[in-house]
Length: 201
Image 1 (tube, one colour):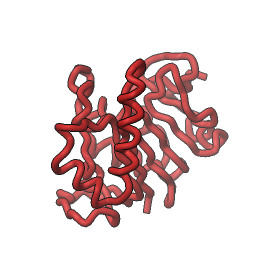
Image 2 (cartoon, one colour):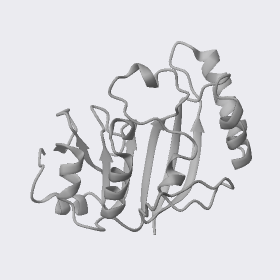
Image 3 (tube, rainbow, N blue to C red):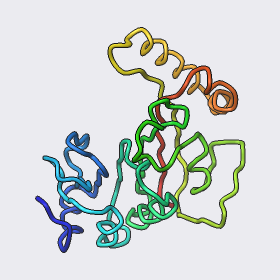
């Protein structure tokens, strides 16, 4: 289905209230309504993300998933507010984005927004980190639920991949070790991505 207008809310309801943004040719959530700016097989709605979201009523989405998508969108506060608007209370916003120390981040000229451990602490209530950051009077209605740093290497670097996975276990063992890593070790051991989860209040 290629539908950017009209019955999108009904489609979302029929698909268990799940959206997947920027899926490209490889959707990860078979039940989701997929949205992308490009027309790939498996994309349900083709269009500009802000225009598509504007057609979705408030509070009809149970979960939003995105993988290496939000770094292409600006301004970040605007997209986060729109996603919070369409989520029902208790709804999940889950995304994976490149970490600012990822050496491949700056090679892609379409990347607009780098991300760090506290990026969503500026845009949501943050009960998980001790370090406090300003909110700049932005209230998205979201609560930060979890943040995980992802360490990996692409094939054929299998030994490097195994070592980085082990590093990830250590770094993600506590909030303190996450903060300790980002404050002093990103130059030595670059992080590949950040997996974050937020809930709508």
